[in-house]
Length: 365
Image 1 (tube, one colour):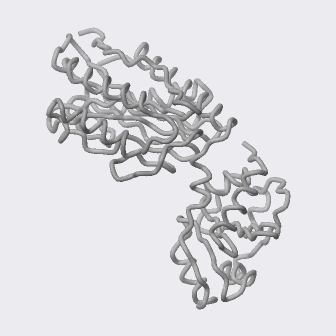
Image 2 (image 1 turned 120 degrees about the horizontal axis):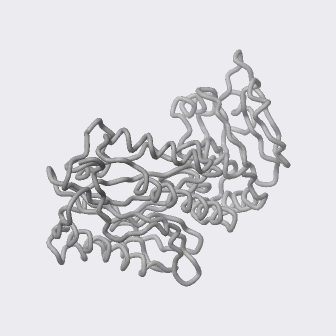
Image 3 (image 1 turned 180 degrees about the vertical axis):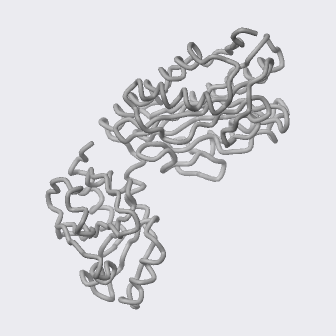
């Protein structure tokens, strides 16, 4: 994925608006977004210094020179193991400038910078992260394709996974099916919860074997052209269970109504509060223990957060999950998750995998 030159231009405009003299960009994902390059430099410092009116400067260890693509308008500043990389960086600006620093720069580097330039003025910057919240048409198309692959994998699991099996077996199947769809890296370790384990929203995969008459929660995603997918479905293994169906319907109806609310100008807090009020009508609000959703893109969790105290407004181009769930300790949990992209007058749901109640069967039992 090669980035549009306009991303750097927009970044410089935001630097001017924030009245910074320079911006230090260190996040691997921010660098990928701005200059379209994947850097894996381990513990060695890699930062992009952006200065309005001047070419950007990429500071990177000399042994990674073969990782650097052609970068228009960016100067490469190499350093070696016998050099102090922070001192090299500090030599490119003065002691009295106002510096924006993105959120992932190591504290040890920052402390070293203050030793070299004790009078520098600095602020934590979210400039690049805010730019990443609004996806362009190329990014939306990749997210759309990534979601379609996740849909296909979920369908394959339902059709081809043999039960009984362990949670670890299902996770291995997920990885295999993503690979069959030319996605060789997962966006996160899948969450597979059988029975009581599904009551833990972030359950760690175990060797638990599935049993008849219990839910199975599957939360998974892959990395397609650097962009993440994320989908959750909950199924029932065994005979029809009316209590499960009733709870499932409450969650599904709540999710569908929350999705219908999404449009430019609505506050994220309104979406989250609606979900909580919907569950409260049924007396289940205390069993909803996490936010309604999170932004997604180059990272699984990036940008926006849909919770009751986030009063920021939804805008076209934003991509995020809507994933209400109910979790009953020592019993089971149900979660339904889709990714949506905000349009000019509503939103597009990227996941099309069925959300109807589905029952699975044990093979050979």
